[in-house]
Length: 282
Image (cartoon, rainbow, N blue to C red; front, top):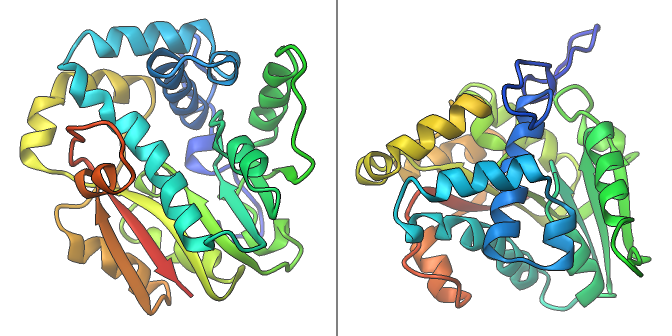
């Protein structure tokens, strides 16, 4: 998201060395690893179709390097977003936008289970095209009529431009903000706020640099970041995470800790406390 007159690809969309066939950009490699983790931990026709062998092999390697419960953050993060989105909407007709959707099946699930919703997923053009190709390999797969895919690099193009000025009820961004620096995050979240209706919610996650959690996962984190990139947007406390959204113009900001979210939505436990779920209202 830049105001430069000459657009450049955002950091996660820039080509960088791909050592194990996961993708040409940091964003693609991250998406492939999480797709592999989802397929390994929750094998369904959609999670398996949305993953590649390289992603699943990387996921298996990561999962051998630490205690199994460390990886509960994968279903808890995904399920936490789903629970918070559904709670925010409370069964009412609404428009939900998932930015940096990657190879997550959540948009499909939301659209399928909630026909009253208009669900929009946005990601880079090659990610969206690859997602379509993978899903088309599933026998009898039908895209829900209330699901729309848009292609855009939101590091270059404002969300309001992609949505053509449409105001929406909920925007979610799983795993996006930690790739931005502390000085960049308020600008990113303010651009999202421009597309929210009054009272609309932005649901996102911010990495939590808990010393104990980082030490326990150090080998896994090290390998993961060699394949993807560093994540400068991780914080050491809730107040810093809240300040990003306050500086971005949000008045009502709530922090939800991962273990509490796991308990709230009956998700796998113990859930490692490695990120904050943020719900910020316009």
